[in-house]
Image (cartoon, rainbow, N blue to C red):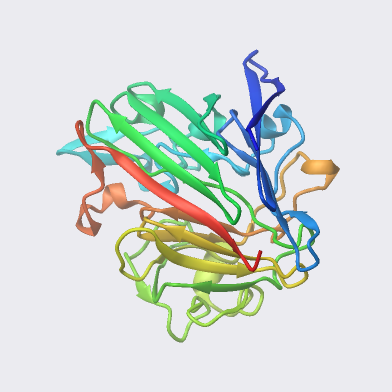
Length: 344
């Protein structure tokens, strides 16, 4: 079926926001030009009934005021950078802080707050583009970004492509909040992760080390278990951030590979996360309590959803020993993440 484009509203600044509707087989998605956000993702439950498995808002005002990056593409650098600064080729680069002294998800006006240009990119795809100015968020270089959503009969794929005219850091992900039951909390959801190590953090959510083994800790998802089984365990890491909000170091592999499997306990919907990135941030929506209600007037509450954000590791710009992730002129940023539904 062809992609349908419709007006969605207007920002406070007068920019028009468009909505793109994609349908293929059992799946349906809605993508906005505001924040390149995934607003709707419907998949069939065990009885064949459609379930909207992502949180979102009914209007533009919700996305402008609601916070929590719901459904949005985040960057220029997803996750946290300590001290709102980094070093590039020996030069200290100050960044815009928006979480105390830290920068989170690109700063106060990151990609999640920008209106992209949208266009149909095939029978079941939409491409959204945005050009970030030199110095936006503090990052050097003019960065050209394209995010392409492609819907197939069993999956939604998100491809991130970017290039910059100066050396910069670039780490882009989607911040969808998943609830495979379509409502209620997600503590009964079962999760498996292809990760034998995770990144510990301090009370400020900044990494204290690159990785630590999950074995024998509440962070071991190498055997499937419910999100709620250990989330309240007596563990300092969980206390630091009020639950799971940690990067998991994915087991080494090349190319697109399976990183996670999430199953809704009531709906029976099973979703796999496939990625080319080395890390995945598991976030159990510990602070989800925004001032604006979500779709159909439903309030957003803590642990009502879970995020599976594929990424480079948090604060990597301050840890070059963790790997070279600088995006330099002539080099292309090109990564894909897929959310695949099984048993459809």
